[in-house]
Amino acid sequence: MDTVHFRVERPGRWDNPFEPAFPDADLDRLLAMAPFSAMRPEAFPKTQPLRQILGNDTRLRRFKKGEIVVRAGDYGSSAFMIVGGQVRVALPPGLPDRVLGRRQPQKRGLFRTIAQLWSNPRVPEFRRPEELKPVQGAANADDDGAVRVFLQDVPRLLDEHKTAVIGAGEFFGEIAALSRMPRTATVFADSDDTELLEIRWQGLRDLLRFDAALKAHIDRVYRKNALQNALRAIPLFQHLSETDLQRVMAETQFGTYGDYEWSGDYKRLAKAGQIAPEREPLVAQEGDYPNGVYIIRSGFARLAKTFGAGQRTLNYLGAGRFFGLREIAHNWRNPSAG
Image (cartoon, rainbow, N blue to C red; front, side):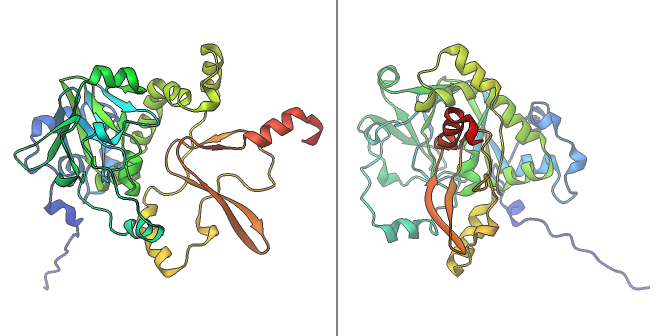
């Protein structure tokens, strides 16, 4: 009788764990805390069990007060969950380059900017040592060569720049990681005992793919702890009283459009000249009656108008931008128009 052998293929990243020796005790601790405690292990395939994804694609990191976790403009392919302590996010317009230990960037032309999309670094958080200069930020390196940058005179920076505090259980950096886009904000530790779980994008993708608990957790914690700060950062809501802002928050709904993994397919199709509107998820249809104002929390949207048999792109809207307000205001002023 012939013997039949089956070979189960696993992702190549299993040969390159994020943390070479992730302690079992730390894994047990992660699995006992939200959102991982709410995940169903049976929802994950046998080739990619929940415990192994966490053990292979995450690592625990500790930061001291004033230490930069991510810098606006840097490319990174990992997201972070706050396990202990808290961090601060620099709100627009952000911290100046001179306090981030970064050299002034050279201006790039259009073609160099576009070319950068296909040459983004794929390491977890990419910083060239020559880009760092200890003017108002102090930098040193770990034993593994990773550059750590500290802000100097943090109290003065907090007086001069707007920041928002986020605490245990919250995530940040997930959109930039999954889309391989530049970080949109600088985040730094706000306490000496800050402990973060860093998740590389492949693991985050699989956690979101196989169980809905992670997305539900991110949205729930964001609504509870960060939504108010996010709305306050938008000029449209800055003049509202606390009571009125709470009314806006109560009517806020979250929606996710498109695939977090748009980057790979988009680059491939763009090279082949095959990007087509029908491949893009529709958020609002031209001509439909508006029933709300859309505010982009992260990612970006394409604003287009029918032109002949196709579409003409009018604009790209990024985080903090909104659309639909003009239509809502028009219909409110002209009730008979609806």
